[in-house]
Image (cartoon, rainbow, N blue to C red):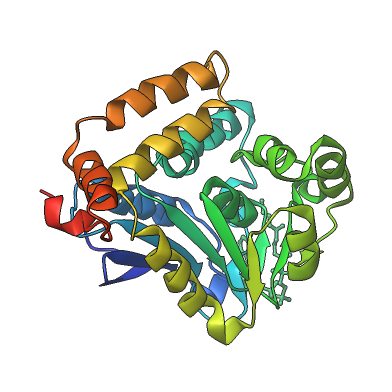
Length: 262
Ligand code: COA
């Protein structure tokens, strides 16, 4: 599939994805979401990619939301389908992705843009970032997981406040609230994401994948997180990466997980 609204680069096993509609502040229209899903699905099977960084093209915006012009005339069924489809194809898909996904928030992250960042496993923001869920000002609510993930990240009371007021949060405030993990100058944002990514990639990709599933289990209805942890803990045993990791420790050397990758 040829992509029109996203661009990519692959270096050191890290795939960077730019949401690339800068003239619309990288708003997520249907084509962009379809392309993102296609790329993520293909990348799942690509052994050269061990980690993903998602950012926005240009210096002004990460993603300024879902494309309002595409849903302004929707009624109940279409609205519901828009939300459900987005959850399945992109937002839940990223949250449950077996490889780490880092959001590099390089400007506005509003509505679906903040929801995209919150679906990622880790968030870095540049100092010009402005983050918020302004949906109620449009007569709608966040529909790509925002009501759930904002409350998970910053707590129920603050999520209520931010969603009801539509207030935007700065990078510094976002750091204090736990909405983002790190903040930095815009010029350093991608390098910092790659530095963090490089640190993650020193560890076992299989174990990381199991950890993502176990941590996510806390937030899933009907899942017992500790049971999931036991299951995923067991899944690590006997794998080539587990054997390499434990052997390296006993041989007093650094584990080389690349050497045992298929
Ligand atoms: N959907 C569709 N188009 C959008 C968009 C969105 N979510 N966000 C920005 N754009 C478009 C604008 O319509 C404009 O297009 P145009 O040049 O063809 O008119 C272009 O991107 C630039 O945006 P503009 O509003 O002119 O930039 P600004 O610097 O004055 O304001 C924002 C920036 C982010 C404050 C403003 O664009 C905004 O409020 N966007 C919508 C945010 C939102 O409500 N998101 C939640 C959607 S569910």
